[in-house]
Image (cartoon, rainbow, N blue to C red; front, top):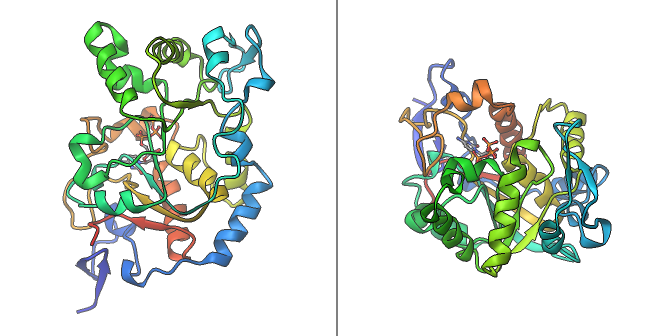
Length: 319
Ligand code: CTP
């Protein structure tokens, strides 16, 4: 009977359509995937009407001074003052100024990466983006090691580093930051007031220990601009996830974009359970109720772009 080949593994085409993971299966076979340069360029041009990654990747030093007041994007009534530390860590020029890469990898955090063997392939890309300080050393075979940009939502400090309650956790975070070795650390500092202290702790740690990272703090308009772009394309996202933000930004400076670790479903294409994150024990309910993200909707949009050759999604094993 008919079969569809999905990144190396084959599945019977006659399947229970109610099953989320099958519904979202990637077709056609990855070997048949071809990059559609015309479409990629058209998308870049459209996105540029809403935002410019070169500028929106970070607020620059010249535009703020210590003591300036900023209204949080999601909590408009709450404000923060630009601290001396934050000011010191603002870049003078965009870390992406005049940057262009032939191929980029964006590595999401889904457990679908486990046993994928994708590490080597990921590391061959010219620019590798990772999310939320996800660990790499222990998972190198599946996720690779190369990191050119890594994001850090302030909530990660609570979730993965116990809010730095003691010296052990501070040291753990410090080791992770030292491991970044000059890459860009992208901190959405102006989104929600809950992250205020956490951002300050991390800033202080970086300065105190002379950590070799290039800090970047996304512009105040980025989130709404990204939402605007996707809304115009009929993708109604309440709050774009880090992964979608990274894809939207990457269209500006990457010719070809490869996505790994994007799979917001609890079963894989062979019906095996998939962890929500490849490295921790967070559960799926976490996204559907509490979180404002609409990952499956985003996934549908990304899958459609995969099918048109604008990006390549890998949701199984690498060759
Ligand atoms: N992701 C995915 N499927 C999962 C987990 C993550 O597709 N099961 C993708 C999403 O695009 C996500 C990115 O990988 O944005 C990074 O994962 P995570 O750190 O969980 O992302 P956040 O969007 O920052 O989530 P949160 O707001 O919960 O911190």
